[in-house]
Image 1 (cartoon, one colour):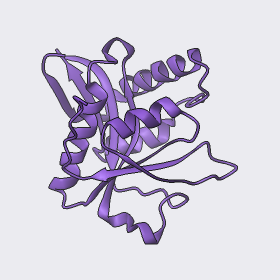
Image 2 (cartoon, rainbow, N blue to C red):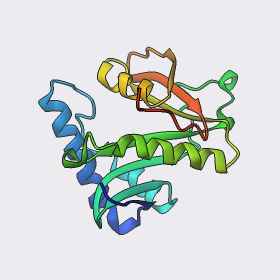
Image 3 (tube, rainbow, N blue to C red):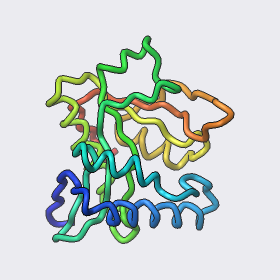
Image 4 (tube, rainbow, N blue to C red):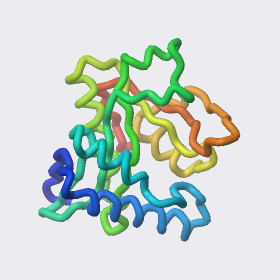
Amino acid sequence: MNDLLIRPGRPDELSTVEALLREASTWLASRGIDQWQYPPHRERISAALEQEVCFIAFDDGEPIATIQVDDFADPEFWTPDDQPETALYVHRMAVRRNAAGGGVGGALLDWASQRAAAQGKRWLRLDAWKDNEGLHRFYKNAGFTLLRTVDLPHRRSGALFQRPSGLMPDISR
């Protein structure tokens, strides 16, 4: 990774975002993980692109990752006691397989954390698939704390993580 450029995706880049998410879905399935085994939520992605909260990361001009960062706190997970307005939320983060392991995911989360701080938010939060332990380790290594797991019968996600905004964790541990 030479120079990672992160910018808002444009509405005409819907297919790029969908391709990144589909590649992640295929990779997860190849590892026996049932996360994201459905078509990408095209209408949600389109809306996020229109609102400029869906971002694409480029390395040497090639799209290698996507992340959505906004103030939507899923009410099935985040309660009024969590003070949802004090955070930005990460959704649909995916890194192209040929860029995986190179620190792109961590760089995206650090970028999102700085974005949250710049907007005066206290936290960067996300919900993760409840049974994807590898993903949980990744988030913990990126400075996130598991707050709780919300177990709803109609939702596979529900492991709730947060980290202070602006935090740049020491990943050399």
